[in-house]
Image 1 (tube, rainbow, N blue to C red):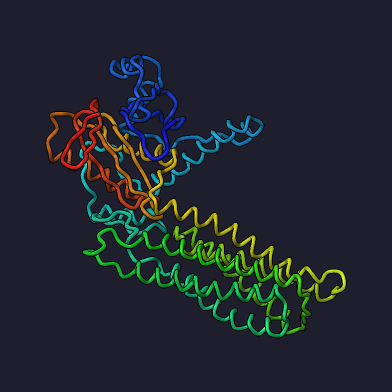
Image 2: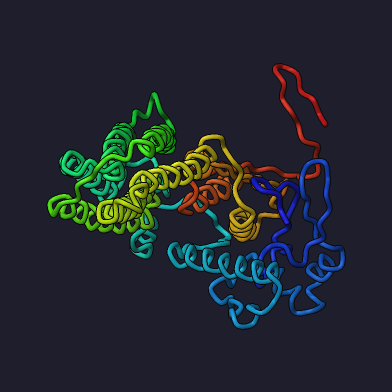
Length: 451
């Protein structure tokens, strides 16, 4: 199995079987470089001679006409009673098949043309027509994540921001009327949502004002920075609320939950539930971490407001026995927010530090590269790592020694465009070589050290 983030070595086109992913039928050996894949001598002999078992001939011809759209997934009832690791394997294989089939249906361009050339404008328009809701495809930028974010994302951010302003005002009124610590914690949470939302809105505006000279690759990395700042603010504020709630446990203050207070809190729960649903749909469609952060925050608000109302009502109607539930509810709300935003901050930190891609994405990239053109002899290295929310991809392919520069350039550029059609890929770099059996070279200043 490839290591996370990179696959080094060489994979021949015939080595990528079309039925069971990218690991079966390969002889794996661990080297100092990484995992290197080599085909067995028997399979090479069969492919060269054209004889042997049917699977060998199918693998040899898959370079010119991969049959990804005819792959059959394993039915769940066939493996649901198996060991957990077996179930996980088949689920991953089915997901990989789904991703590849969706990709090739959305962009049904030639996979292994004998005349691989960059996309023309007409081909790009044709790809857009077949892509449905995918982003526009152009010859210069197949899948550009640096373009202005979709209108739906902006609507979700600004609507959430406006709702937080409204709820802050009405919750301050409810806090004054009730004196409940849970309601005060909910009002403080709305204030923090407003401050944190300001961070996301400002980040969204900065991303849309990209300067191609000062920021050639755009400002997409600003989105995880904004979400990470959001998480830090929520952590600190929740800690302060928890400290105040602990102090109120020893004071036993009186609270007043009147009809107006209950109406305000009920409106808060309903409006937050609707915005959580809307932001979640926007985040799923447009892969926006800002909209996803707002969806998580609205979901948290639904839970925290429900707990707060329940705790305050219990303390109000049974003060002799349940007086402590008001402050206890506020403490529980604060702890939940802290745990949730710790996880969110950790995920955004991975986006910012360039964490490597999962083995499944590497398998998908390797398959696309291996079946892009029949003249590609080997896929030497596939590397992918986070470049903000999406991935930066590096692929090294091996072409015949006697190939002209023009042919080599056209194959590499068309492969770059195809890789950039993947929704997870922000930028792809393709390196063409004529051999793969070489030692890695490490540059240190002006010295070249060969390992």
